[in-house]
Image (cartoon, rainbow, N blue to C red):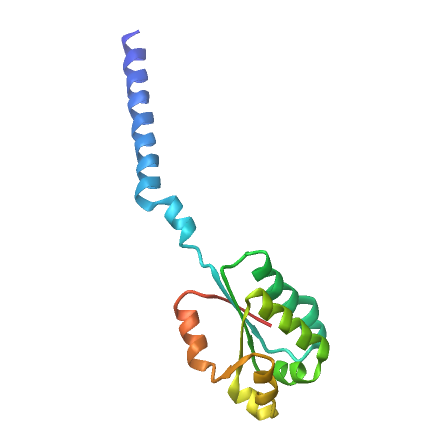
Length: 149
């Protein structure tokens, strides 16, 4: 009988210690803080000259990410062959306008756009055309989530 009481007491103490550890963990690490520190900025780097990739993946996800508030900040960077495709495709241009109206940040790599001779055309669509190496590096280093297509 005495042995049962002692074992029961030890088990109660162990349970209380474990409960204290669990409570301390959640208070010290701040589960709520961890949830709020999740990356909330998305940068999509669109490099493909494939129209289907643009319409059936890149543009849909970019647009709905912002429209549905899946991410606080959503940026689309037009880079490489995608700049040429965008400069000649009216449907893609209309979609970019729709993204801009929703609040998507639109930028394009000036070096690439200049190579294709489309910098002015992209700027005319409301896209911020600039050299993107340093800005992209800064975004990655500051914790933006990046996707490349």
